[in-house]
Image (tube, rainbow over all chains, first blue to last red; front, side):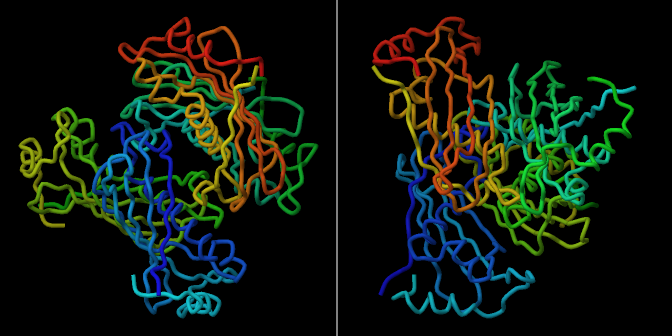
Length: 142
Length: 142
Length: 142
Length: 142
């Protein structure tokens, strides 16, 4: 069995730095999103796949803990791990590694829910397509 | 008769600065947008008003000329002037004034077209509602 | 005695919405920053004031809990409350109110630390200027 | 002899779309920046290389012409071409190709100047290091 995780290398944009000379803290949520999208491609659960099944998966909670800074010109890697649980939620954990300094830049998490595209109501149980997707993964607790 | 223009005061966000310590050049397009929205409120042609008439007005061209920098903590004012012309276009000119240094930070312009919301096709003549709006302004050449 | 809090009205930018038609979740950190800056102006502890004292106050943690969406054209109000505590940290709590729907859009918090501008080291006790600022507020627990 | 050009593939971020469901026009300047950085890596003239020589190269002019839209999920490619000329300026032309629709999404250009890091004054002639870099390219008119 495996942990469901993926990694992505990201080049920091100059526009993402701020006047302290480091990446502005809010931009980490863009890196988390890059990580989620790579995860979606790797495991066949991209936003557009989910949308075709009739669902949005809006973020309802996000958290970032900063451990060290990222300067312009430094290379980073974002690791994304899907948490295993029973609620109708998608919970990812993130690790942002600064490859240049070899330090953890940040850790964090996001929680998404399933929202019906038709009437924009919340799904209280996991949609069937997602249950099936989970079953098809040979997945152990992260 | 009058020139159709409006002004808006903007507080520069810390997140809008870059590692050179000044506002990142691309963020000026956000200030232009703030200016356009204020213009829309002042003259009754907001995006949502236009949308209710059945049109989007996407930007098809934008230009920025930078004259001096804006530092974090400096106050700016954006002046927006609507150009008078006959094509089915909305052309705005902009002046970004740094109120702290009393220097022009940038000038620029944007061109918008009318796109039908239904089929996303381009309108080749000015929509009637917009012709009427123009007639109701006591408007001289800017 | 009083709670240290401030509020700011914000106009949502079109560029802050996403393809779901609502404000992209990460942009709430910009609204939090707008709220913090207004707080700084109200109470005389702006970033630049703190910088003159020899300190940066980088964000080391942030959290957002989304309760409802914000659409383009809706008006919002951000309320910022400073938490009272003894560590060398600045902890703000936030409430983003959608004035158009009269619903809470999000709540959240950020934690900042004091970093010496000279050598970029962390301060383990509150800097004197900040202790003095706190004493000058007639402040009760929020 | 050759044209100095480079290309980069970019995945559009969800956060870069707007409520019209397409990439917000201002974000193209980020794609241009991605293109410039790739060019810098390819030809050994990255921002940080230039900085070590004692110069910033701020953008003083930018222009974008939009030809078609980019939707979330579509792949794009940015092509950057350096213009050959005699002034102390760096002028790039850009082409943003939507690989999914096979249409040109936008063309544009940016102009950068050389600014001395020490005193932030403008250089009126090309810095020597840059002259040398140009000579070392076997470069024909683009």
